[in-house]
Figure 1 (cartoon, helix red, strand yellow):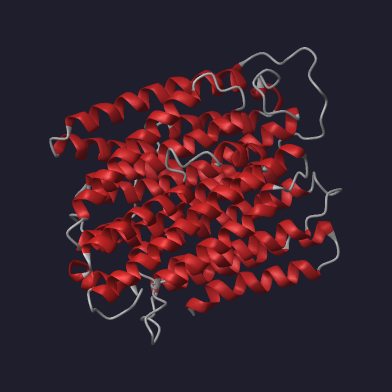
Figure 2 (tube, rainbow, N blue to C red):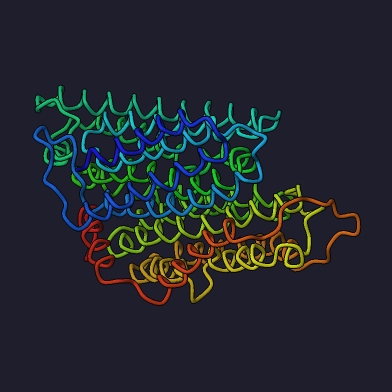
Length: 477
């Protein structure tokens, strides 16, 4: 059944390509995403054993990413129906097919236990996202697409070199030559230390660039700023999870070797640097979609800090991955609605959104409060657990810097969001077709409901899965 995760979206992509009508084609997205979600739920309940060669297995880490990505993609697919009804003059065949191929590739990432297969799937997500970023077909979107392809492809190429080094370290150490995760974890301590060390550096840089850890984040502001809100939600909430999962596989190998502490220290440093970059560049940001890109840099930094702290913070970091994914969905979808209503993403022209798009503006404001760690929303819980773990371990500098950067980011983000939502409507406001309607408001509203729910109650099955995933990383359950 695990192959259905990969094959169903591919079948949907082929079907969407054959549908001739723009209006009907978009309905292929929710149909096949619901089918994929159904398969995902079935696999979470009854998980089959590993494939005969061991290349395919859905473990606890994969389950978390699969659950987050499947929910986000399904809700975004329903949003796409409403969004594309405003874009009927622009062909959507490539967009619909690419979205479903990307879903297939992300599904392959979560079930891959062979690092070579995981690398192929991750590269496939890079390639399938490129035409989605270029959907608006203007000079700025093509520049953003090329920057995205160039930086992410270079990063993935560096990760490939890291895999070569890791494989070569098994040869030098006279171990079984394999990139299967269980074999690498078992033999990690016996691998040649020089080649193993080089492999970890290259893999961290490669997968870190795909995640958008600073200073490897430079593709994000352009890609997130120029892509449709629908695509931005999947980039920030879905593809980041896949890159993180790839990094977590490397983390598992590093934790089993003698270099786990060094790997954690580097992640901790990169995480704090990412939060610092976000705090600096989010201040006085005049483009509210680019602002969300720096918010994404901040939150991958928060997850990296949790991984760097280790122990009990691993549970919180994995929870934050889910919280960030859902909240970013609300931010980008509501932000896309506001952009469509005002035909601009500049704070110079977009003000008083509550008066023109009351539902979308209210969701944007609520998601801003959530993503900046305000109670009672879910990100507050995971961020509180991370900072508590830092102080509990006696790492007061990390905890202090973490809180300082959160405060600066809140102030910087508020200086952009509040005028957009609460300001006065510009007197020379351009008239546009878009107004809030159920097809484009209900999807982010559902996501916002989930963000609130996880802030007040974490279901016991999810808690158990988070503890199991943290144990795979060497954390305390």
